[in-house]
Amino acid sequence: MPVPSAPALLCTDLDRTLLPNGPQAESPLARPLLRHWLQHSGTRLAFVSGRRLDLQLAAIQKYDLPLPHHIIADVGASLYDLGPTGWVPNAAWHQQLSLSWQGQTWRDILPLLTDLPGLQPQDEADQADHKLSFNVADPGLRSALLPTVSQRLQAAGLRCDLIWSVDETSDIGLLDVMAAGATKLGTVRCLASDAQLPPSAILCAGDSGNDLPLLTSEFPAVLVANATDAVRAETLDAAAAAGHPSQLHVAQGGFLGMNGCYAAGILEGIAHFFPAARLWLEAAQLPTS
Image 1 (tube, rainbow, N blue to C red):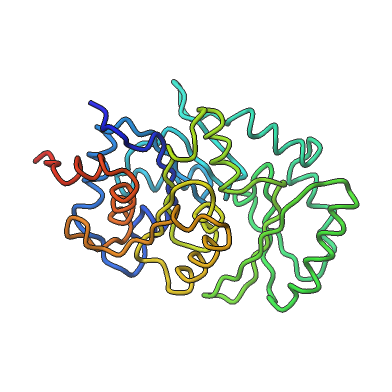
Image 2: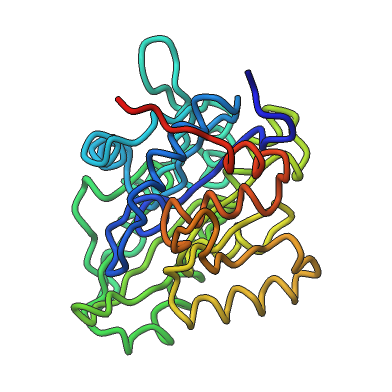
């Protein structure tokens, strides 16, 4: 029987949010309880990740995760729905992104940028129709490189968002050229619109900087306790600046004796925003087999 007042849709990041692949320990009962709750609550599940589709499917198998109803991949550049025969690209979302790039894909756009010094295209497997990703050997090139990339794309009539980050383990810059609107937040808004759900019926969960727009949006959201201090401070500031800090819950640990990290943080967010679900979780008895 569905849990009253449960979220209609749970949208969660994978790495170091649902997946316990960070340095912090995982509360042993967290993932089993979340799976048990999803089986009984009537809540639909969406994974929201920078991973491409095949790597998300591999994570589902490796970590024995519940099968989601939707997969948002490539940081929002791809959206798949689970159909009777498997994973199907969401036609409306991909059509929207296609308009930003005038029907072109990353292969068409790559020649516009290949002569720029310092840009190294990532492997073909790391590209997506509406995402073109580069490594930048010298992160110091950022200030000169990004305006040039932006000018060339605009001159070609392409609407793009540029996402810059640094791989701290290798000190390499990472540049993603995205079709305008191809973000985690944009894709969740697409799902909400398709299902005609108000923001209050959706819960989002994340742990890192690229989750920040989603965590500080109109949707109720939880930042899991294993987020870094810097991300926690940035997220709190951004939520306040957006004008709805009450929509963000920062997991502290303690709910059901768990530490608030990973799936325990997601459960804490469910309990915080949906009191009836909290009562159900507190009374839940996990199956013994």
